[in-house]
Length: 310
Image (cartoon, rainbow, N blue to C red; front, side):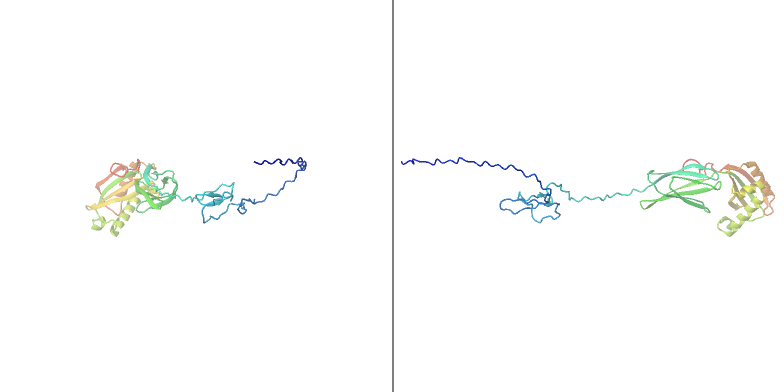
């Protein structure tokens, strides 16, 4: 075996001794908005400064050097360092069913000769609505609107039955409640027989002209003979004369005089004045033996109550 007898013995004995002593102190103040990134076998990739709004038609990028983040739920590309916003649609429409307000009852607060006060209750006291309030009789009607659940009616007639109706529109539906209330009064009832008039079938028909003419003539004749004080009360609507019925025999007439409880005329004075008027009538001959005069309260049992709750 042959072994070489010489090996290279030359070792470089010099090393670079020059070290740069200056360090650049200038830092660029302009930061580029795109940073080129060089990867082997890949072209430079630019990071966008804003979130792209185009959803790629292909699947998520797989290159680790593309600098993009893929949201797997929407396949939307977002810039690094940004928080993706949810794109799940949220419905803000709320469907609610309208529950109509309903009346519970009418409460009668006061029923006097010339005034009625009421309140009413509903199943939803906090629900604001307008109420239409109507009070009426056959020949009278008064109507008004209010937001409050209370009403007061004045200038009424004594011993008259009034119908009170309250209505409102709730959820497109008409809601109504009705109650009947009679005003209070002192009532003087008169039953008398007229001997110079004959009964006819027309006097039983309140719609006939014969009936209306007799009622007009008899009430005018009776009022004419009353005292001046009572006549003044009739003019003020505090005393009212009603013919309640006309019967055979020859002609029997039943009359009621209703007196407001707000007047101070004693009932005894009223009854005495009626007797005087009948006896002094020039149009009708009265059978005194078949004439009775009595008094009652308009709210007696058997009639529409004037007090308590409706």
